[in-house]
Length: 196
Image 1 (cartoon, rainbow, N blue to C red):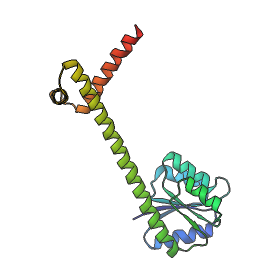
Image 2 (cartoon, helix red, strand yellow):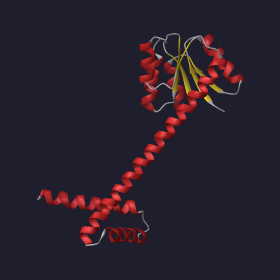
Image 3 (cartoon, rainbow, N blue to C red):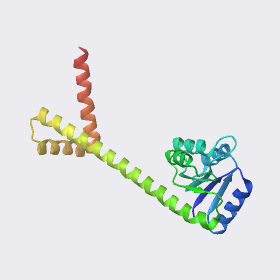
Image 4 (cartoon, rainbow, N blue to C red):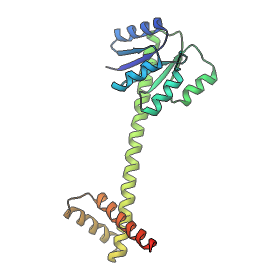
């Protein structure tokens, strides 16, 4: 079941969309202002937030920017304004999509589904990127430690790696953890020598 937050100061539109989405199986929360929406996302997670662009107080655009900085839900805009500059601002804020009012539930559902799918794809790519960065960092640390061992022990690359791996196993530690420790030790020695 998908969890959607709808933020709009027009109570008629808010209730119409919320009831229609609930009727077809969505879990829907509603907020009539950006401030109310911020409070709601503190204690819950949403698959998507549907934001009105112009609201009194905090605009939908300002709310979207807050969501982006605080790790809030992915968001789309539902607005009566389709000016190119407004749509560009929405895209620059990180919107998954932009739909122009008036809209009814049958139009909104495919838009929501596509936006949630896109948000999940982006999150998957970010996660994959994070894992790759971590793997590259571990590999770089291991290579650096192997280089240090090669110089200190007079071993070839394979011999130095085998030495590092055997030492990590004997200490029941990860190779990357021991590699980081070796690098930190050499950096400490280098700092000490520079200070003299």
